[in-house]
Image (tube, rainbow, N blue to C red; front, side):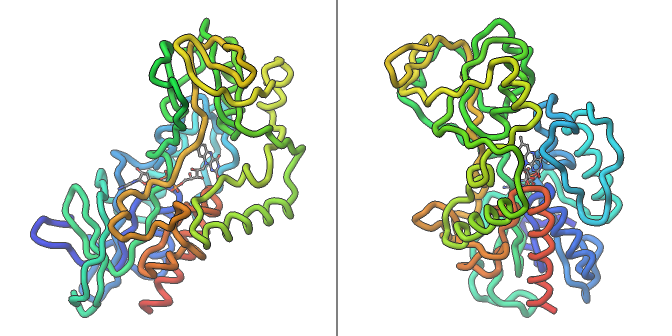
Length: 368
Ligand code: FAD
């Protein structure tokens, strides 16, 4: 069954996105007796999962090929189904979509795709099926009228690319890690890598093995030999509090510091792990440094992260002056029918799993 243009189709829960977070939510709803709308009888509670991708896998479908199972930052399996043993050298963009696909089939989650949601708005107070005050979910394949919306749209589709003066004058190539494919493409060219997160340091290692690199970050990285449990718990609590107050979710790395991982050590051994301050402007042949020198560049690679993909939630008017949404325990504090999972402190595979479960439990507590 699909939504039609005749009018919004009623459903109890719409889950937007079928990455780790959305599949976890769907699993926990199904586990509690909520039924995919296409297989439901009139007596059933219902859900539908809408996903913008052509196939299973969420953002993992698009990660660069060299992000192998050995170099991902630790994958937490989907609830109730272990990741099958995989060759550590295999690409995560092959192994994980296959795992997600098997998971969807095993649990009969009936994901509707490709379906892109372009707006979620309040539907007024007129009751539909006895339930008042619905949220209307508008998609490129018709509309749904939902009692609850679980937003699980991740960040991959919203790369963050800061603006610097002179950016448009650069004669070389500029790209965000979202469209990175392999280091070999840069052979023989000098690459300026911008950013201080996991992607930046992984790609610094990879690219410096084949060509000359120059690494810049806004702040001096804080290096850690390892992360204690206390430090991770404190960092998560910090991000949770900021999310509750409506600040945009910040990366955990920013709060905890960077671990000296195998790729960091390799880049250091090669002499590539030399951090420079951020350039002040971009010029046709390179980047101008704060001391006035020009660093020649053929490529600028922006490893500057991603932002939550939430523009379809704009009609709800929930964004705070700080730029985020006020969310606690995955639930919007300003629109209790909306859950945001894989958002704020739940922006990791383990966090996404938990947030999906918490959203399903909260909805079941409401609707019984
Ligand atoms: P996604 O996997 O991005 O899924 C969101 C889904 O929603 C996608 O299918 C998307 O197409 C869909 N969607 C988006 N907008 C719409 C819309 N408007 N309508 C319909 N569908 C929509 N975390 C870890 O724990 N371990 C790691 O090793 C790790 N490695 C990472 C490596 C990189 C390069 C990056 C960027 C992140 C990494 N992360 C890692 C964090 C990772 O993003 C999360 O752990 C998790 O995979 C995100 O799951 P998600 O379900 O929130 O989002």
